[in-house]
Image (tube, rainbow, N blue to C red; front, side, top):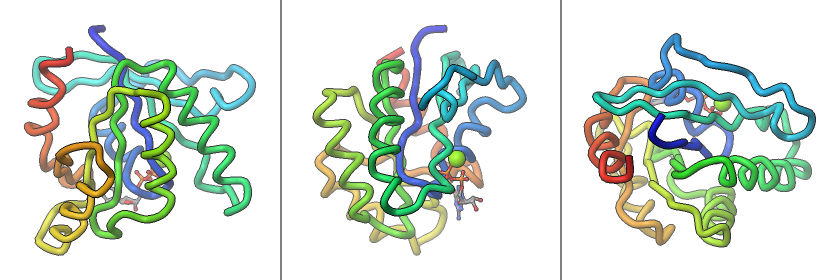
Amino acid sequence: MSFTLAIVGRPNVGKSTLFNRLVGKRLALVDDQPGVTRDLREGVGRLGDLRFTVIDTAGLEDATDESLQGRMRALTERAVEMADICLFVIDARAGVLPADEVFADILRRKSAHVILAANKAEGAAADPGVLEAYSLGLGEPVRLSAEHGEGMADLHAVLMPLA
Ligand code: GDP
Ligand code: MG
């Protein structure tokens, strides 16, 4: 296992869809430690010739607006600590939302090694959101469609030098 990749981002951007695509049926373990780690799912990721540990941050889907910020901050900080690389996912169809800015701030403060992914990017409807992603100041977004399996070669290309 060459590196650990944490998939982070606000609810509903497609983190788990991407996790499932990378892990397939090779789900390794569910961490049942108390606290925020309950909401971290770990598996063996596979992308071309790359093998790595992948962490999905979950459990935020049922959070209310008031509880969401604190919980997602704690969970994301924990995932960042466990990971060598963070894959920060936004929804290209929705564009950059205030909640995405919160994640970008966390990742910047933690000095994490971040790859920005603009998901749900199948089709031209996602083009404005992909361009908006540059405003997060995290470099060029990798254009992905986790659901349709598009952009996986581009993701491989950015991960390979880091493996
Ligand atoms: P999470 O909350 O970030 O883990 O997001 P999920 O993986 O649960 O996905 C949230 C919703 O977005 C689901 O309805 C998915 O089917 C949908 N979704 C995920 N990836 C894509 C994608 O690439 N394109 C589109 N159009 N929808 C997607
Ligand atoms: Mg999820």
